[in-house]
Amino acid sequence: MREEEIKPDKKIDIRGLVCPYTFVKAKLAIEDMEIGQVLEILVDYPEAIKNIPKSMQDHGQTVLEISKKDDRNWVILVRKEKE
Image 1 (cartoon, helix red, strand yellow):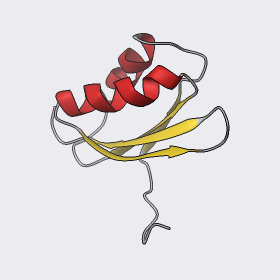
Image 2: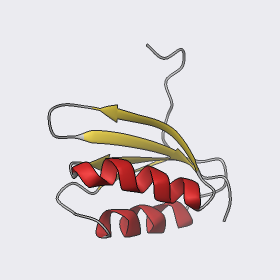
Image 3: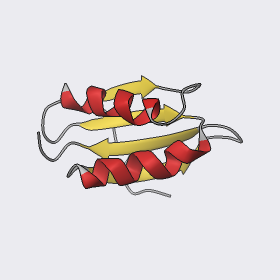
Image 4: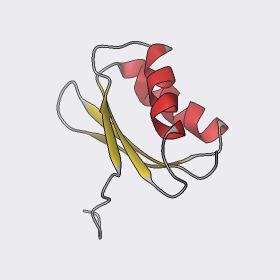
């Protein structure tokens, strides 16, 4: 159990999309945000659970959490660290 609940500043639902579209949508969403803000990404594509966090880290962002909501859906929380 987490000590504090992370409140996302923006949420995107990209269920139904596959890579590379999942990362493209996530990257576009985080580009519109301010540094320090948190993006919540809802995905259902198994590859995206690995690819989005890796790509976000490669671009200098911080992956705060990856959590399974149910059998098909995952939530990825990313904090914007740089433009």
